[in-house]
Length: 335
Image 1 (cartoon, rainbow, N blue to C red):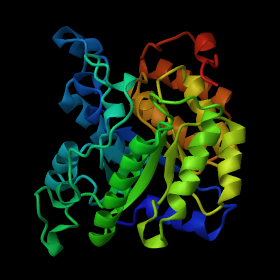
Image 2: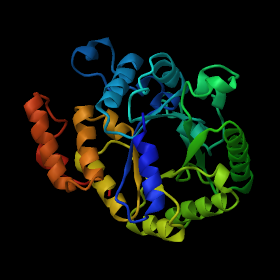
Image 3: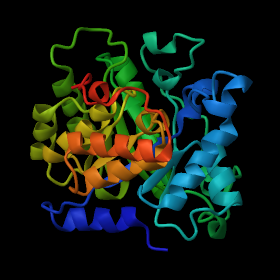
């Protein structure tokens, strides 16, 4: 089946004024959050422990893929093996499967450690072959069994030795990916533990992106970017610098429903063409309904505050108690 991600990306490149918007569900949290990744248990699941199970996490992915409103489902390689290679849930779906291609130390976010207090070091648990076919070496005709799209993340911490090491690891990944017809998109985080002061973090991240991609030819370039949303000025600066970049935002922590809806709406207003929301979806009261309204916002069908009210109305019809009263959920806490 034709994938909506491919169609939208093509149209965006053909017409920079195109209003198409790529929406991804980032359910690769088991690569970073450990047992907390599936989210807090609720209802009948809660007596079993504070967090949902990995199987419940994967069931939410099955449900969202079946809904067909996101363009990309981002997963760990172990989940990709289960859902893409074994269950074949993407074969007749417009949704594109994608995997987290590396797990540098700054995403080791388990509640039992403090890795995020230390500067990021590059690392990859998985391989491209494992993503494509589930084994250490893929025969040519087996590479299409799994995912052919991956997220590679990099974090610059204003230290020439550490940042060079991260860039060298990214270069090695790009060369391998190009040789195996594996596409990727690039995530650039804000510095997690900078070794020297950074006066303007958004400008620092934009500069790092510009210089990193300046040495990358078309064959090895990321299909799009995933970056923190630093606000209108930083987004406009990056989009203006290179209109050929397809810039996407990451969702970050949960916040209110209005935080999530407003972030997507405003980022698109200032040039973003993709959003990858993980915790904002996973921690919502009803993931399918939450995604429904993200899609409506991405397609210019609603304003953020109207979407919050409509979301609460649907929760009421479903008999689901919201996390917050409507007035509280309309509050902006992250922008």
